[in-house]
Length: 279
Image (cartoon, rainbow, N blue to C red; front, side, top):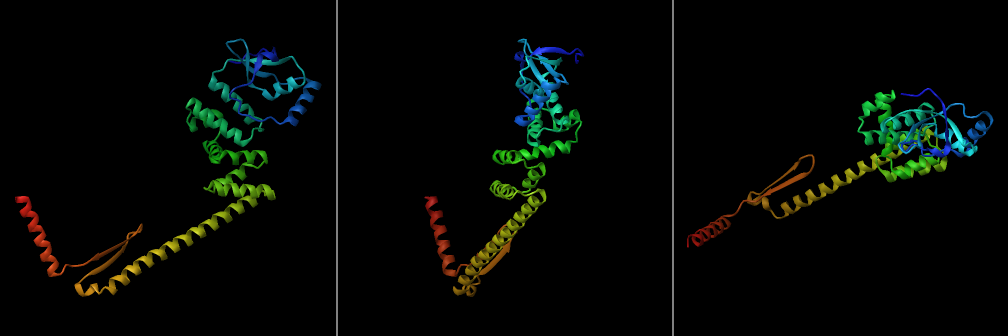
């Protein structure tokens, strides 16, 4: 339970939350917060958890802590509370989400980490965070993009909708080509979505052409067999040529009846085998 009493804690006793979802802190924003702290002090206390070794782990307020250190403060106001590892991760995530300044990829990674670390089903995580399951599911899907593409999205401040557009492509190399063009031409979301659709249409056309060529190739093979069949006058021997399209493949069956001489030869061979086995 949260202790209502605000206490002053030495900054040297405080360390960051290992489960802090935010991995990047904007230098300019920290400097602005530092200037505000120098002028007005820390208006909202940090929330800390006391560790067994006497140190304190930040549950909420790491930006304030970093700015306070930059401002040269030796102590910061804090509320100390007990929290399990799972609760510590939840608190850090909720604080960042509520402030709406957590990047969507950092948020997605935080969801995934909580689910994997504490075996929390997606539905249960959504309930605990007060969010729709589809919101969490859509965020986590972005992590299907390769790390280098995720890095480019963050580095060039592309939006979550840019990322969603890339998910429509299932080829990583094509995704890289698209995002490079988006960055180079500074495409907005609508332009990016249009580019992705053009890529999908172009790929579908190429696949249709490829299938068409394959069908033509198969017909060439079958026609060649038919031509050879006819040239050998196999029909005069009662031979048959049948072809079937199974959907997955073409099946060609050629049946050639034996002439009497061949039948007699086969019977003689069978008799020889029987005699040999009898000996």
